[in-house]
Image 1 (tube, rainbow, N blue to C red):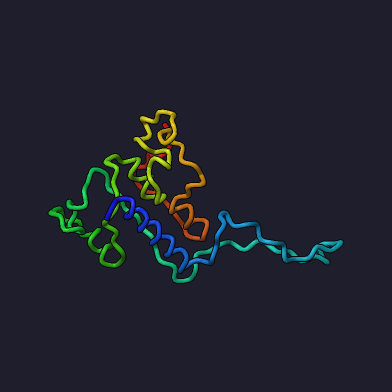
Image 2 (tube, helix red, strand yellow):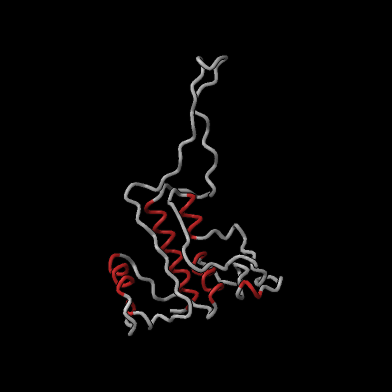
Length: 171
């Protein structure tokens, strides 16, 4: 499978996950909820209506993306390698494993591709962010329109967080 196909597969799988578990939503951010209360001449004649918070659907799965820098698929025991990674093994047994990911051989660009499902150059991360050049594809300013997996999940009611190394923003 080609690297482009692997990114497409990851993007489709994550899209399917959201389509199956979240309310159908074609536009993010969600539009404001219409006011359903009533406004009278006085507070006693009025009915308040607070907007409802967006929540992940009941039973929605947890999503965990793990990226290890400077490690190939063949290194960890999870993917048949010699290095014991029992926690990775346990997590992988309980979920899905994607093993056809395209790596760019650089951490920031690979991470940008992983979290957006797009080619790293289209995410303006054609190079490690500290070496941004200011030219298209290399300015390290990822457009907001290239929403990350975390942003899409967040806007559909999941709680999200990032642990560890993150240098996908300009210096």
